[in-house]
Length: 256
Image (cartoon, rainbow, N blue to C red; front, side, top):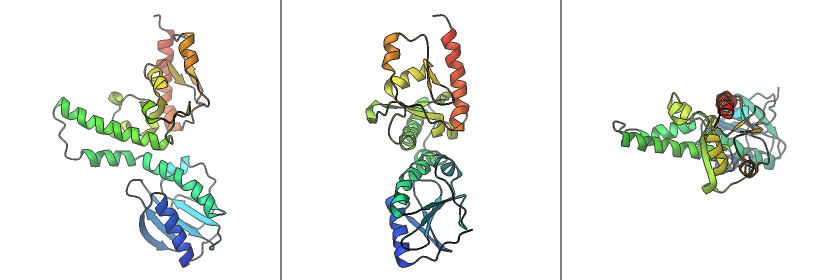
């Protein structure tokens, strides 16, 4: 098992630059050649290290959810956290860090933590007061989805914010907790047309992310629902999509 080298001035400066430029601006310290950094908005810590000033460079993290979705092969190295990665160059490390931050700021429990901070002390006694809290939660949820789906509808590629909707898979009112309401894996970032169809269960998705379109939709509507690639769905998405798909089939079979 590899062991990283103690950090030189050059390595320390490059690690700090990489972390700071990608949202991890709190330096926690260095141990055994690994420099630790934290974010005020994202969950978890990251560690950076190198064998020498020319690389290879190493990244470790302790957010299991991020590690699960980062889609980068891990390496066996004597390092901290739950997963370690190796990069031949600084540029390849820089390519990986933006997605890491997007996941760390959007996956549980970052949105929930933000929501609880923004609503701490707000009254929830009247319907109007509860609606204020709900609106804050929906805004936090949308922000999380924008990060998670990289600011674009994964079906159509549309990236204009005004045309994107934060679609809950399990509806807000049916969620059992704020944690579920704010979990980005209970949501899809869809263009307005797809969102309207999904909300009414006129479309749903197979486990491989391929859209299912209700026979109740006319030819023009079906033609308007263009898409370029299937959804990339995690197991957490699929648990909820399965229930949505059951509703889709029930409504599709009902007589008008």
